[in-house]
Image 1 (cartoon, rainbow, N blue to C red):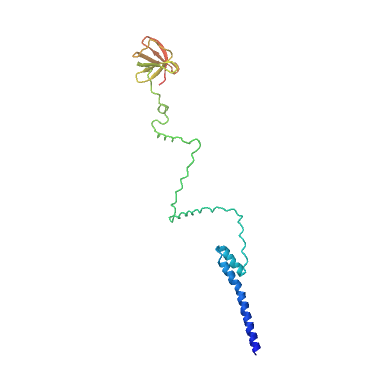
Image 2 (tube, rainbow, N blue to C red):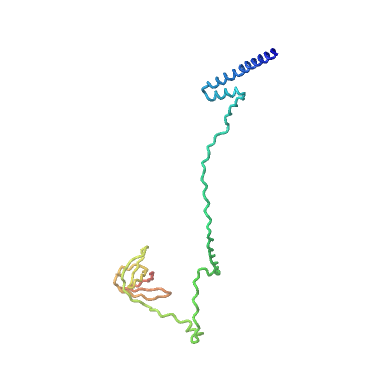
Length: 201
């Protein structure tokens, strides 16, 4: 009976000593980790005591760094007008002009028929008014054209061209102009000289 109690006491004492020896090491290690000043190294020391594997070192990124594109604010869409657009009247279609009449002035209306003159040649074809055959007028200016041909200006502003220069003709002279053949005109000066003349203005 006494031997069994003694054996139990000895076993208990051995267990106590073993336990104190088992916990002596970790307490000292914890104290050693706590004495480390660098936080990273102190954390690594605690991880080693806990049996954690050391973390793998991060690999450097090989992707090229790209600058973030600046954000562009979205342009708000214009608000749709609630009012319906007013209809636009279509232009009137242009009526094409008949060939040969583009820009032609409208023809005057024919005169009303008169029973007193209808069919009468003399009434429907009146003779041209009689024109004077000669003119006596005073010379108001003498000159010449760009190419040097002599001219004279008569009363009223009419400008006439002479066939040749007349040194005796002077401003203020009175000349006589008469009609010739085929629409020609002859001028007689105060000195009785004759010239073929032609009105140019």
